[in-house]
Image (cartoon, rainbow, N blue to C red; front, side, top):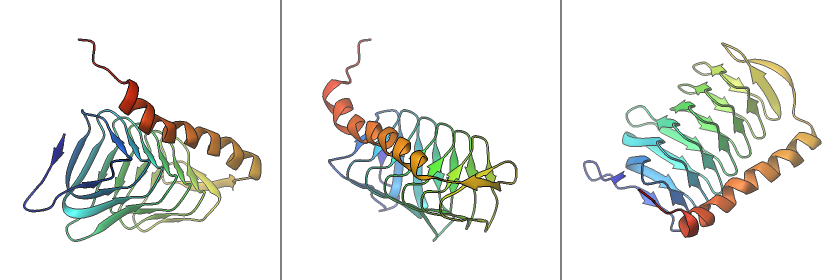
Length: 173
């Protein structure tokens, strides 16, 4: 479901896929190759949301921003099921583990990873190529080249879903 709100109109690339049960409201930009799964909510009602190319917003993700502020998701980002991102920046290739919370004015660096259920607190910076876990999230290790190769393949699956879902997803009820 895609909604204009008080003149704020979503901009969704025709090369993206947004599931019909996802809710997109207001000042939201969804770039080429982005996959938005069922029940995701991306709400730019009084803030601005930008999602870069080839990113995956999995089921039940919530993305929002404070009034007049921006939540920026880079390219090739994977946002795991049930995560929340609020007025934050997530750089290219980052992986946000399922159920993670990335909160106000925090910054997750390029190729950084939040383990499942992690909380990146207000103004916290997760350095590039760093894996964090816990509440609050703490550094655990560095991302190595094998990890990157594995995750590139996972990320390509979601990029392929953008076209596969458009062509092959059919309601049967």
